[in-house]
Length: 209
Image (cartoon, rainbow, N blue to C red; front, side, top):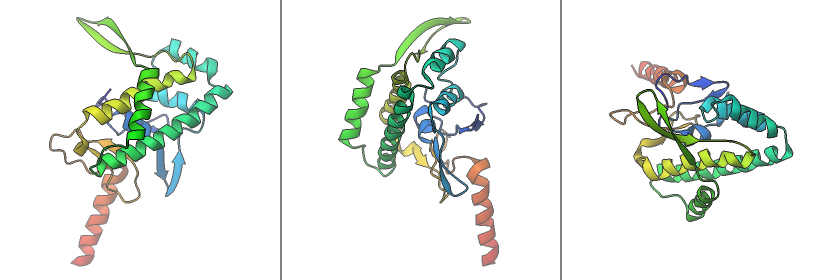
């Protein structure tokens, strides 16, 4: 759950995946696009698309489960709760990036979610190996808490805080887990912000000569 496959595209079905960690990719479902805040989880249908794009929902059976409740009032209410949690997670990550631990109230909330919606696992054969993987069956909206809470807990407890960063571009709010060997990643993506900052730095140098 910590990393993303190297070959993964940055944008998948309208969602950005440059965080290198599921909880950070979840955090990045609210962006600044064309200088305006953009909420990507606008409704339960958008949540369904994100769960599929992220790989959490990866089977026809699970897609059918989600379709059964996607248009319900319960699903719409759940999306608003999920967004509220995402913003509390954002505050916790900002504290972590500033050198402080998340607030006790947030950790208590996350701990409660872990207990009420534990991440189930399954054991299966994969070629010549036996693998243990997350088992996700979204029979109701609240089941989505399990992978989200597990990823958030993993991020806070297992990832080196100094490797969790926000893009250095002034107008960017994207966070990422720096998995580079030197730990020198500065931007969410070379394609999105890196090249723009390099051009701006070059232009500044030209003006000074």
